[in-house]
Length: 334
Ligand code: GAL
Ligand code: CA
Image: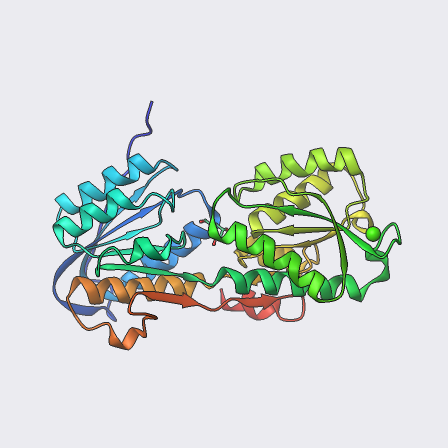
């Protein structure tokens, strides 16, 4: 039984919203996310909704694709039928954008893909296609650097004193650009920092806290306290790893170095408390506001030149490393 498609139509009116910028004509913006239960995506969308209140005359039509590409295709079809002027798509399957591209092209409705990056050739299929996200490579390098610094800062990190890091990578999602690249770059950065590494396991936990907890719990049964580092492709999985150590009753000294990526609210708190050695800020505020600005410009057929699109199609926000030394700035800012 398919989940009922939840459709929320929000009319953002000028009343009670004094700073709202009127857009020339009434416009309608559609959004579909791969999974509204994903922490980072839901924080990004909260920012996007807040950004939209800066404009008047805009109607939003939003859907959750519930991890089903065929459902997302139908949502895009419906948004086109309903007269959306531009549609923001967080693809379920980044290798399967064809149907959506064909629909958009046939009806001349621009699409802004975000967060789940389709291959460059697909984005070149039509001039009305855009991508907003970040450079995955950068996040992996920053995560590896944070992990290397944490390792070097304490001799106790090398629990078995063999001079080698016995590590686990908690992987996001099979085939996702961020999972593939973050895993590769974080480990390579450790090696490039002159460290020796020994991979114990690299389970997939689909960006999800409870799946990561389950995966880590079985590794704790196998390795007890001998895991020395857990590189997580995102914060939610790092938090699941922490839950597993806590549930196993291991003392903080027995925990490995745990690093995440995203800088979500709970992720920042775990860095502040020292449970995570650090995280990498995935600029959801920047991505959301770039998406809002681009969507409004495209829907109102205004120039996008002030948005500095790379190759006329891409906007990528920079990542930022976060450790105990600067985490308070991020907590204060949120
Ligand atoms: C990543 C983010 C993850 C997850 C994923 C979904 O960029 O770090 O937490 O949200 O996107 O595609
Ligand atoms: Ca060791």
